Length: 385
Image (cartoon, rainbow, N blue to C red; front, top):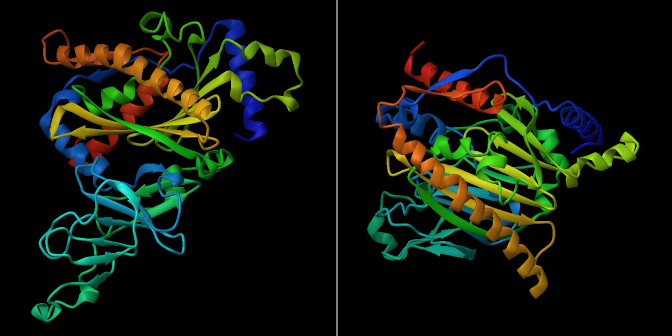
């Protein structure tokens, strides 16, 4: 984060602490519960947000060098990402152009991808390099039967892909002014330490909601993170549909003993960036948590998510591996044992007759902002008002 932004944010958070305030919206917001349970809404969201958008699929270190690749099926579309021998990133549908089998599995390093069905072979740039019985396919030129390309971007150390072929999106426009701040983190220098796949009986938006307010910190997390952070105290800023909320650690008062020009607020905050629609980037002291959140199996009541942990240095010693495992395990423990079980009861309650909407208070501006953006986008796509 640039120093000028650190000073401005530090002043805001210290003022909130001193006056027991938080960022606020103009009015309460009524969020229809139907948007969490309706199959038609889910289908529209799937096309609008998870087919026709550039989606973040990780930091650059998921492709750590030439010849590396990974597969990603989180969107429901089989995707293959590669880094060629010149260091350029490519994205494809992970579908053989002969009979449709996946040509790659998991992640790793490869010189080429060989379909397990008939051994059609593709290069790192997606070209069809070889196929057995080539003469049998006269009229189907190899040059026209490479892997189907997807739009990709490696932008400020982040990897992006659009699951639908032929869709091109300008990343600076998508991030709407947030590019510079993301660039200040030097995300491309971070190292992928580990990942976890989680499935929960919650709508995907309800999973995102988990991250969007600190009002619950000293209720739901009274025995874990309440002693670390001020509860019901966050700063809020937006760039287009993307936004940032920042919670202050209880150590932030130490800044008062320093000149603002010398402030380093990063050890005293947790910064949460929502990269619309479904990626949550969390700055935690000295590392990055990246949450990728998706609907699952065309069921509005199901979600799947991947948590990636990125560290400033590779974990090359046993002590470092223990340290990062402890951090990773704590994150998973808090959400799996505290946040998500409550979220699943909320999802279940949406199917009752208790209410047709839930309330976001003026002290929860990020929730209002996020759901208003989603509703406006879906209404525009469906022609509703």
